[in-house]
Length: 124
Image (cartoon, rainbow, N blue to C red; front, side):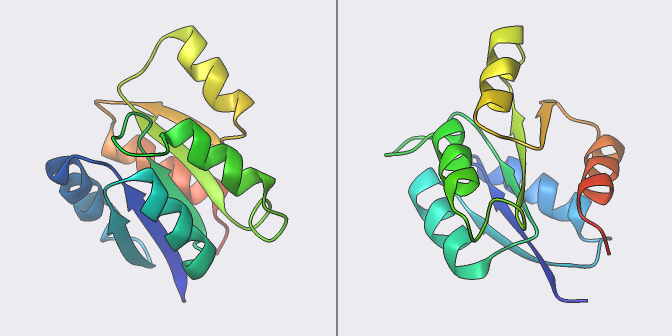
């Protein structure tokens, strides 16, 4: 299987935790630490799923990256976006769904919940 996953978080320890969680899955794993690179990598790699932090430095936050992925006709149906963030207020979740995310998980996340969400969204 040649499925790809892109992990986007500005904190290296969080990226490492997500990488370790996803290692058991059948994905080629890629990572970056900012929204601008995440958007470029998504357009280039065309991953099955993007695990995307919301609060990141630089030009684009996770909501904006999600909106751009979901506005791209070549990506909107083939790339699932899971927002994985510490922002857990109802307004944050609503903003995430408004941006078009396929799932919204709040940190600290359960590795089992993350894997279940990926499995539910990304078919073999």
